[in-house]
Amino acid sequence: MVNNIAIEKAKTSKIHEVDFDNLSFGSVYTDHMLVCDYKNGEWEAPKIVPYQPISLDPSSKIFHYGQSIFEGMKAYKDEDGKVWLFRPLENFKRLNKSAERLAIPQLPESHFMDGLHALIQLESDWIPTNAGSSLYIRPFVFASGNGFHASPANEYKFIIACAPSGSYFSGKVKVLIEETYSRAANGGVGYAKAGGNYAGQFYPTQLAAAKGYQQVIWTDDNTHEFIEEAGAMNVFVRINDTLMTAPTNDRILDGITRKSILDIAKDEGIKTEVRKISVHELVEAAKNGSLKEMFGAGTAAVVSPISGFGYHGEDYTLPELTDSYASMLKKRITDIQYNRAEDKFGWRYPVQ
Ligand code: PLP
Ligand code: COI
Image 1 (cartoon, protein in one colour):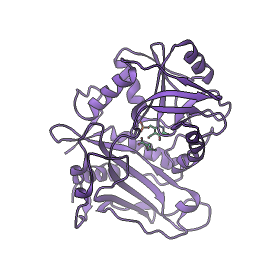
Image 2 (cartoon, protein in one colour):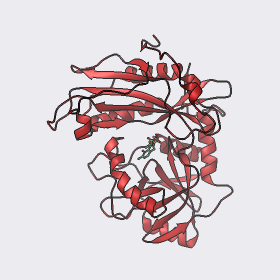
Image 3 (spheres, protein in one colour):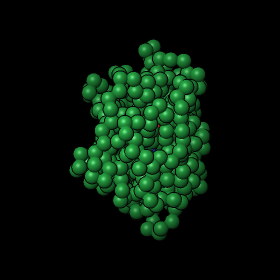
Image 4 (spheres, protein in one colour):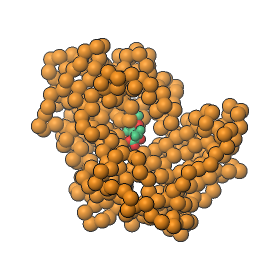
């Protein structure tokens, strides 16, 4: 028992089968997972068990009505072997915000935080230490309850699984500004981290990939005139020396990296603006040379520079900067995450 979490240990470990020098993103999993069931109107005690497949009835509502939400977090190991999380309570709060929107019962904070803590402690040998690597943590909740009736399930599973991971993108990202499809709509579920938000992006992203772009920049569903966010990250734009990002609304995920980057940028004395950014403004800035950089920000992607964007059949390439905001901000945020710098904002959370 750790933090009152029962642990059933795996009989053997797979850790020696893993090539920690060549980790891709999220494709090998640690020895254990946290599992917690919602039954008879309450969340039962979470427990840690060996990582294993789950058996579900074909009528489980997750398969039919997509009641499924998730989070993305990372555990970092510093040079002394100490383990850290980054703003984990924010992920917990956002999980419950997503849960509310998908009519999933609210998870108690202690189930999430104590379960997470115990799991990361147990799996700490799995946290990679190579530059740019970390233990990616995937908490998720889905409707395990049965029935073809289109209504919320009466049973759910909350699971946390972990994957030692390298970078999400291998280099700079070329993006396509979307003019036809929408990721989210007013009054919809865009602000929730709902599985279906990602499923709906795959087809337009495949179309973009066929044209040579790795990510789509979503625009507002009403006019397609304002940029919102990318598939797995919020988007920042630097015009001259001002750093800007779109305001969050019910179509945009309120990214934890996004708000941390805004705080760090302000702390650096960078002028920041949280406001609507039109595609017209972006294209004009690219043409007149005032568009200095664009980058995505997210847990998986960290700070990912954008090499250029496509719009209306034209490609716009961004300049190569030696002193980019992206590289400075990435260094500052990862120095906090990996305990290489003072944490003046109080974001680091020790796992001891
Ligand atoms: N936007 C979307 C659609 C995402 O999937 C993510 C990733 O979690 C983000 C933004 C960035 O959010 P965060 O910084 O909290 O990881
Ligand atoms: C994350 O950044 O953690 C995410 O959830 C993005 C994911 C779709 C890979």
